[in-house]
Amino acid sequence: MNNFAIGLKRFFKNKNVITVLLVIAILVVLYIGYSTSIKSKTDPVNIPVASKTIGPEKQITGEDVQVVTVARSMVTADVIQNANMIIGKYTNINVTIPKGSMFFNSWLTEADKIPGNWIEELDHDAGENAFYLPVNINTTFGNSIKPNTYIDIYVKAEDENGTMIFGKLLKNIKVLVVHDSSGRNVFDDEEGRVPANLGFALSQDLYVLLSKAQSLNLDLIVAPKGYTVPTENYVIVTSSTLRDFIDAQTITAEEDATTQNTTNPANPTE
Image 1 (tube, rainbow, N blue to C red):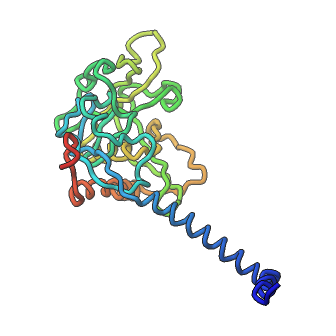
Image 2 (cartoon, rainbow, N blue to C red):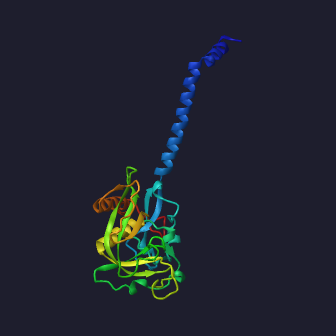
Image 3 (cartoon, rainbow, N blue to C red):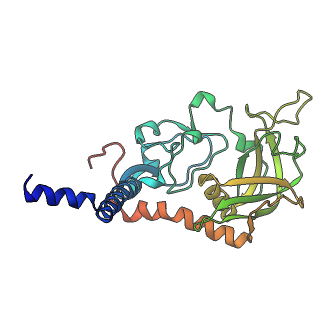
């Protein structure tokens, strides 16, 4: 055995050398894994977003959609990534899509699944906007929330620091109608209909605020006016703090829509 082979054998028998090599190997693997993970989250991806606010039961046209570039980490499983799967469909009966928002599968439907124009059933003041909020038998406290009663709307969310926050976003909202999943008034007769949407009216600023909160898929909690909602281990915040949080979360997409390169959904090569 030559001197080189003997030296190499002694080198690898040295425990300190082996330890250093193992540490280096582990660091290399961790670095590659970290780099791959970061790259997968920050890689840009083209996503269709709303070019303007779209109300309930509206057919989506090419003018309603534009494509922006966002980080891949912003795209969840329910986000529609192809504009052709959006154009021609309708917004659902309880959905308002804010300008700059991505499109979610659960927000869109086909024309034959829209039961009718619910907004016409709401008798509200000029300057207000009708809003429909999805509910169920549990979130309406066993169907005890009825027309002409008042509700508060709370928000549970995780802020940018990972802190779980909770607060009352809106208060003293008058319920105008309660519909089931077919658009029928729950309290019209004795059939025991199950609530699916609460209808109420909001001023323009509150309408936009709640639409943004809904577009972010925040946990919106309806409660009878004055009811104390359990807060669990959440940090209690003010309505003002919630508004700032919601605005901060939704402004990114709107900025992308105006500052980044856009393409025409009808001709992605433009």
